[in-house]
Image (cartoon, rainbow, N blue to C red):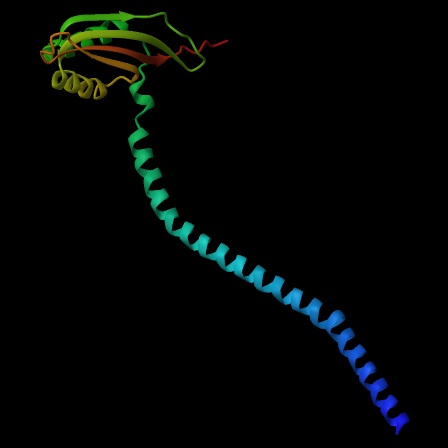
Length: 181
């Protein structure tokens, strides 16, 4: 019987060792691989969901690009071939008069030359009610010449009578002459 009991212990020990080998060398690595596959699958599902959401945004972005292209279609058409600074400054003065703005000062700065477009900084100053100045800017934007407003300073008068002093730094553009050689 002793031999039977020691055989049973030996069989149990061998079975335990086989079970340990099975768990350590087959089940644990397989479980790790399965966990990694599940993680990868979850990441792929998330990526697909993001892609689907981005595809929905693509139509919106395409529409926005088309609207911007339509707005900018005539952008370069608003940059004249000639300098015509005097005529443009005269049209600014006319707009100021049209909107009842007083104490007008319009001073061009030193011209900056570039390869394709040249620009002239212009300082403007006038006084009027805020609605008059707002309407002036609206009309200035609607001119057939590109004007970029770089800085605007609005100051209330000391008596708070509703009169606002507007100081603006703007830039106007015209096409640079391409020399033929």
